[in-house]
Length: 530
Ligand code: SF4
Ligand code: SF4
Ligand SMILES: [Zn+2]
Image 1 (cartoon, protein in one colour):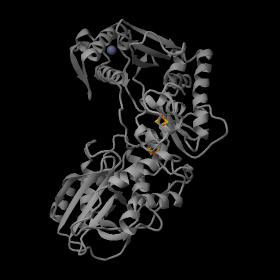
Image 2 (cartoon, protein in one colour):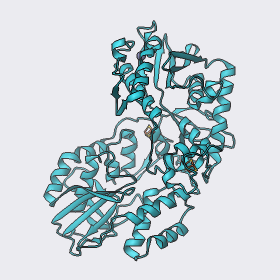
Image 3 (cartoon, helix red, strand yellow):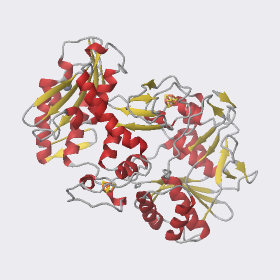
Image 4 (cartoon, protein in one colour):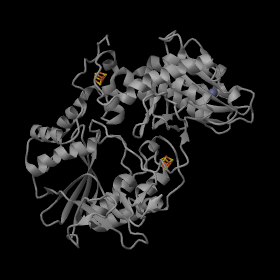
């Protein structure tokens, strides 16, 4: 690492307490002057993937240039990278229903509000990304976070609100820096005398505006002291590296010793590209419909009909077993552990009623006979749903995985996935082909990427049915199993790695597609061909 660490910059986004975040990544991200000796190359994708930026540009054109939404979309689409049809459709809808300010004396305000807390030992430069409005005399300001979905989603992190509140109350108007490692360019030495600040968020998917906090600058100061200061200090202090999916967009990766290197894990030929990330689920999505992967997993457009009733039951079973296996004592599940009311039960955020509750209860009861923790390994320990990540340095891809359970048996790791189904058989004869996540798991075990004694490792698929339960085992040291797994993963990864346009593949996948609302190519439920 090299460069000048003096500039310490915290945005409202960085301040958000993200469960996937890595303390070291945040600390470096907050110091734009820090560089790594080996620069990370980022994907120069053909398609525009910056959804908030794209939408904001369209709103800017409407609010500052007075163009209609259609003209604004055309102008923005012609100006930058190619735009996926799904993003164009989404942006058109959200820009039409956006709650523009059209009464009172608030006006859209283009510059950023940037505040420096000079009273702090290391004054952070703070700003918030979103929409800004103020009265001509600057006495009243409104900042709006943009949410891709609805305002009914997850509560916004208070540290993030605190940074936005503080910068709206005390920030000076400033231009975006010419270079990211330079400070924002202030337009005034002094901010106007702000008397009232409103912090709101707009759910772009429904056009709703919700006020999060409002009050005079004194309240913003108190709010920041209570909810923001400690978080900003912890970003400054940094923390040890926590590898995960975030490594896929971390500028420190070339200098960080933590990500486990796994050259060739994906079996991609054609060389190393810019840093990207994927998972078995992503690859499966891409295979079903590249546009679905792009809109759902890359652009993160809002989802509908996210989970079928079967999927909800599966998730409830996962949540319950995860809680039981994660107790920390690696003790096997008892009948009491697994007993739920067949008329209705819940686990995690999943609630089941009627026949799904009854089927789920019956499936759970069968788990006891195949509980992985009922083995004879009292010294072993278990980890439920760990976030694993590996860096395929040959393809330059971060590969993530989250097993239902990995547990240690006599010094070797065993990887267990659990499926629940009312079907009597799988579509494929080979479970490694049916579930690409199993193929990826087998390759991870085969390479010993979890450590331990690989000679005793195995992969298990536990299937829970209403009529009973069974466990199928695959050996990561069996060349035939390894060959199948390699074929499955490289067969999915290769087309994904070269895809730049993510075209729609209308057909069967449309029936359960969570982003079909934004897709102009959807053939909707009822399609039965690919
Ligand atoms: S590479 Fe991963 S673990 Fe290392 S700093 Fe970046 S996000 Fe953290
Ligand atoms: S609606 Fe159909 S074509 Fe469109 S993204 Fe979804 S699966 Fe693909
Ligand atoms: Zn169990």
